[in-house]
Amino acid sequence: MRRRHVLALVMLGLVGAMAKFTDDSVLDAALAEYATATRQTLTSAQPANFAGIAAVLLGSYTITAGLGGGDFGAAANGDVSGRKTAVGAQTGNNATATGTGNHVNLDDATTLLGCTTCPNVSTNSGQPFDVAAYDIEFEDVTP
Image (cartoon, rainbow, N blue to C red; front, side, top):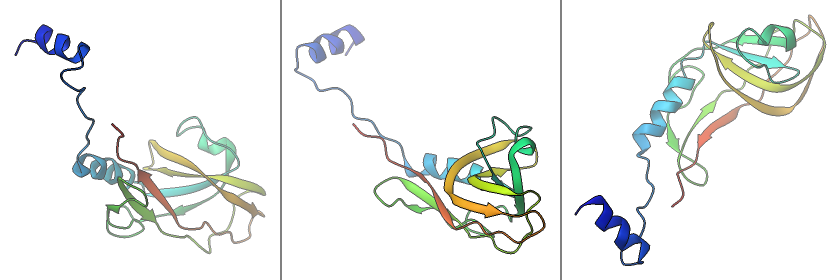
């Protein structure tokens, strides 16, 4: 059927609009990109880009990249819908600055891959700090 005929049928209400759909493999590919991260940083604000991390950095952890291995869990069904991966908790590294961390960032040494908020973490330079485990989750599209 030609496009103008389909459009006319949709406008008349004889054919419904097309549903939205994203296959799990597409969401898993996005999660796999996050899982290329080799460093997790705790910052006092959201950095604008990779270079911006330094201005708000409170401490960092070297993490093991790989979806389903190291510091990233396997791709799994999301809590409500879609797909997710868990990022493991980090403990024991010493902070490089004193402050209150409220953002956790993942980078691959050249690109800020993602940033999320976290519960406040107080840091004292030279003292250990912890970052709780969290999920990266993509919900399914809604029709």
